[in-house]
Amino acid sequence: MASHPPPEPSSDSNKGWGDHEEIHVSSGGVQAYTDDDADCESRRPLLLGTPAAAECYSVSAAVLPFLFPALGGLLYGYDIGATSGATISLKSSTFSGTTWYNLSSVQTGLVVSGSLYGALIGSVLAYTIADFLGRRKELVISSISYLIGAFLTAAAPNFAIMVVGRFLYGIGIGLAMHAAPMYIAETAPSQIRGMLISLKEFFIVLGMLLGYIAGNLYVEVVSGWRYMYATSTPLCLVMGVGMCWLPSSPRWLLLCAIQGNGNLPETKEIATRCLCRLRGQASPDLVSEQVNLILEELSYIDQEKQASFSEIFQGKCLKAMIIGCGLVFFQQVTGQPSVLYYAATILQSAGFSGASDATRVSILLGLLKLIMTGVAVLVVDRLGRRPLLIGGVSGITVSLFLLSSYYTLLKDASYLAVIALLLYVGCYQLSFGPIGWLMISEVFPLRLRGRGLSVAVLVNFASNALVTFAFSPLEDLIGTGLLFCGFGVIAVASLVFIFWIVPETKGLTLEEIEASL
Image (cartoon, rainbow, N blue to C red):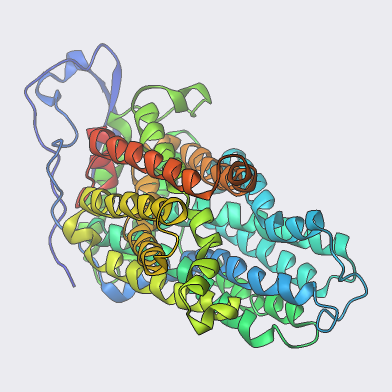
């Protein structure tokens, strides 16, 4: 157990706060004063660019506040993996177990993409309800949406009910992928925050792998697609019950109190108890000091007003929006859905016997993704975000140009395509996969974090849909080789963006990141 006290706010002799009223937080409460009355108090709340001392926490206490939100990511990944097998089962005259198995391409597309459309709706809903409900309740609602969606999909008596179930499950995805990284970021100790949020990506990949395995097990069972979707329902229940048991985010509670939604001394006491639960064996005195520092930073940065829509595109939130939305946009438009779409074809051309069975190929790639995500989880808080992004995206760029060369110039060099495919998958899971979700949970200011993150999640799913739907028409128009070359050029642009725009946040508290922006 770490046992270092939190840092004291640093002093700064510079003035320049303007003629506005500020709030000073002490152990006795909150006290208003003006600049004219506090010459000696004119200071910055945090020393910019200097990492905080280690927070006091217990490893065992940090497990469950990560695990239950991370199940939301696992259920998202499971849906991706299970659907690949479910579509094969559903369209089979032998194994579908239905009279409506003869699905058109549009109907198949609705089954596959229904959860994506629902996730877009969930992201929009998150914008309006996130700050009102809080991170914990949003995850509870997400688990309910997951549960109802999975049940309707598995028990669907006809195609229409199945599509409704897919949409409801997708709404759960949108809410979970918005609230889970926020809850983990706001409750995790700063020294392991990067590892825990990256581990959520590990859970997404683990869910994909479990979905591929379920598809492989049930693909030749009558009505096997029903079992594939029904398998997720126990996890939905565990997630919902677990989130009901966990405490609320102390930062969200304090933000609500600062904005007048609750009694401040009482909320401060509740937030202290919540943080004690989240930190385990940490000293109550040290936890109380951490709460004071969070509250002091909220007061200094004038968060007592409710956020408006226009503020998301102003000041430091605009910078955070550019960083967050830029990362999740490049995460998708560098071809991630498209490269995986070609995985089975590439492995089959190289003579791998397993490539004849799509579910086994998926398991192979799922294992690679899981291993590389595990590597990223282990090193993200030691190496930092920027080195992993720059190194991983460089590998993505090389792999995309290799794939382009294979489809245009080197069609007999199937080994080159296999190397490029594995390089792409590995580098993506070292960089964009975990780091994209990590950064968007860190960079937004607390008062605007719920709304800003909902916009970033919306951009993520919208750009995913854009690449998925535009791939086939573009492939017919310009050819596969030129299309992968285009993805490579976009990857070069993303490298420039990362190098010049994306900051390093390793070791900083959320308040220090906010101050540095």
